[in-house]
Every structure is written in structure tokens, then in C-alpha cells.
Length: 65
Image (cartoon, rainbow, N blue to C red; front, side, top):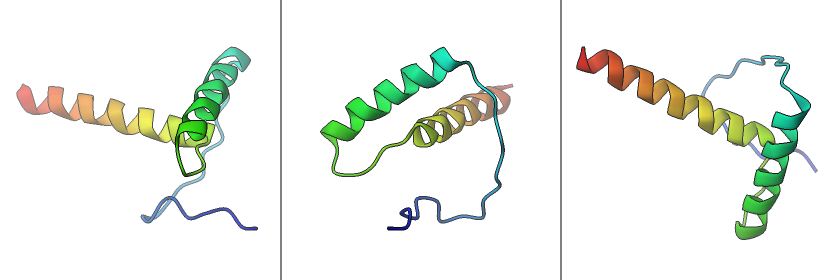
């Protein structure tokens, strides 16, 4: 079964090194969220959401200057 399409915009593949403890914490969160949801939630989904939140905060700070 192929992976579901989650990103409808053009994409870029980026290989990232993170600490094992960070990955383990994210995997636990993703697993807990998936149990409460009707869709698959992966560590990559959490990382993408965190990046979107970070970009949003930075853009808001830049707009307020």
C-alpha cells in the first residue's frame, strides 16, 4: 500500500540529523496522537507542523517591526 499524499504543494527532500532522544519523544507523541485520530500521524508530520509554527512566529515578528 503506497503512502498517502499529505502535501499538495511542491516538495523538497531534506535529510536531517536529530538526537535519538528527540526522535523517541516525537515518536511517542505521534503514536499517542494517532491513537486519538482517524489518520496516520508520523514523526515527519510533527516536524513539518513545528516548522510551520516556527515560520509563522518569525513572520509575525518581522511584520511587527
